[in-house]
Amino acid sequence: MPRALVLLPAWAWLLAFVAAPALILLGIALGTGSEGVPPFRWPIGPGFAWQGGLSNFATLLEDAFYRDSLLRAARLAASTAALALLLGFPMALAIARAPRGWRVPLLALVLLPFWTGFLLRMGAFIGLLRDQGLVNAALIGIGLIEDPLPLLYTEGAMLAGMVHAYLPFAVLPLYATLSRLDPVLEQAAADLGATPMAVFGTITLPQALPGVAAAFLLVFIPAAGEFVIPELLGPTDALPVGRVLWQEFFQNRDWPLAAALAVALLALLIVPIRLFQRLS
Amino acid sequence: MTARLVPALLVLGLVFLWAPVLLLVGFAFSADRIPFQWGGFSLRWFEALANNARMIEAGLLSLRVAAGAATLAVLVGGVAGFALARWSAFTGRALFGALVGAPLVLPDVVTALAMLLLFVTLESAIGWPAGRGALTVLLAHATLGAAYVAVVVQARLAGGTRVLEEAAMDLGAGPFTAFRTVTLPLMAPALVAGWLLAFTLSFDDLVLASFVSGPSGTTLPVLVFSALRLGLTPEINALGAVILALATVCVALAALLLRARWVDGGGEGG
Image (cartoon, rainbow over all chains, first blue to last red; front, top):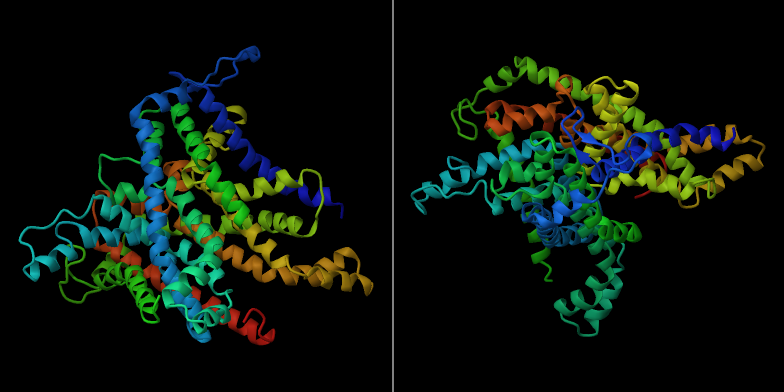
């Protein structure tokens, strides 16, 4: 069978559902809002007259509200990725060093919560952290506090939920790298008198760096657009870019600005994405 | 790092991952009206869940959309992964590879907005798809799933398996017979794994679904999200218990299947 015939449906699918949406998104980001349905004008008008511009992007740069939402998303993604690495690295190392028969069950234990529906797990966090929640009830019960602590709708609650949701993304690439390391090198260093810390710093960590970078990016990239967890667990006044995009689109019906926000988020992520593709 | 600290942190991490899940499931059996408060053992919230017509309807819709999206994803992603693994040169290969991989690296919210804008534009240009609902959610999920399937298939076909097809053709098999008797069985585990992955992604997805679904496309996550925003209910706990039980059964089955394969295949993969 000629290759072109096999590839034709795949090409059609990719052009229709990957390439076309990207071009439309970019087109609308360059367009302007209008009163009609749908509420925007294409940058190229009747008779191929150019009527678009960069005004949406100018708004994003000038208005602190949008600028801050992008920065906040980057900060949230970076802290999530850093915390997921901090916890995920020792987890992956322990699994990689576990006896052979233990590794697959341990990995399954890391991954299984991932299949329980992330919304339901966020529901559990709400149940734990709200004023009448389990954590506050326990703290009051042992007499440590008298009034419930405001735990839910805080940065801390949001980060806990984010790390919970993204931890498996960090553990998997780290495990893949760490399980391939040759333990003989570490033994050699230890035999030659290196302390456990020195062995880790000079032998284990440098060899694991590609995995560390991949794990960081694998968390950072999707976390930058996350808006469900901040909405359910985070502070109400500090919206990351994903949430602002949703509001612009569905509440303010400013489609060109929402599209421009999506393009700006992509522009911020282009370097991490290229790095990730190089690593994998 | 000392020998004891690392396993201790693994235990800590597992406790962090599992504590919310186990509490969610445990309190599903509490009679109390307030979620996460123990009021004695009861199955009333499972009964309430079983009688919640909207939840059941959304759950069935989610299952149908996930099955359809996963099947489409395997068809598109299987061909794409095969082409990228086996054909080193064809017109537009670089663009093809970039388009296949793009949904993997884009944040959900960007893909979701772009898909919605596509459907709106298509509707005003050619009248299809008319409105948004289960069909548009399915198409969006299939596009995301196909990217994952392609990666899994490509990985499976990499690494020296090509010689098997060459051997078949040396022994007189035509390219089509070689594909059917050698390549396809080789790809099969990746296609199954890819289907399951695409199914899970679709079943758990909120962002794409909430952008591209209309009133007729309320999937389970969309319904759960709106319920969670209004406040936690014990029915949500019961739903969590049901989904965890189903997921455990599926993972156990997949593990058994894989183990059987490894034993049959003489320790492949280890």
